[in-house]
Length: 210
Image (cartoon, rainbow, N blue to C red; front, side):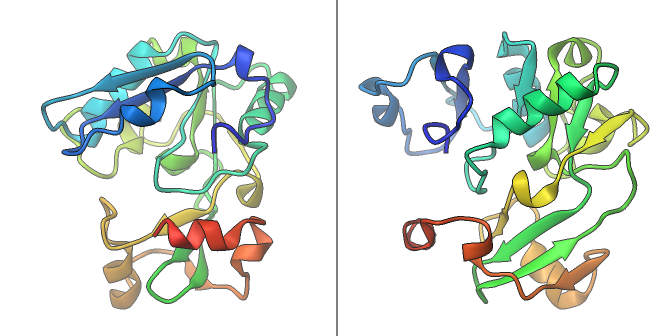
């Protein structure tokens, strides 16, 4: 997904934090992509702790979250840069409305929107100046957004969801959204008639990854 981004690679950096049992460093050793930093961790940390590490490593003026198990369109980075150019006083951007692809049923649901200062972490982007004074809760394993976003009070640019992410729901997610769907405990969840083809072109390659 990074390779596919339309924003100029020479103006970006890609930071990968890897605390997995089977390290993926060989994937990046011989790559022709510029400005890649791979950081292996031998110890498992909470999600909040890892996000604090990543934001501390970031050098650019704008930081864009890209989770390794979600789908981001090729215009993901450009969309964020343009949004901040058009909203010079806003420090954070993200989506309160998110489309979710359930791999167990091949169905797409929509959750949200909740309110204009709410967003899921997997959709977030921010100016680096904001991150200098805001941290994630390092004890939090799942719902990491609240503390970083001042309990959802920070003014925010709401990004168009379909142009930002397709959140992938599978059995290894940190938050069990499959169980939440079954139990009816995931708020504002609604089934849609959308298909993978409405979000991406290479659907077969994508499905095989899961």
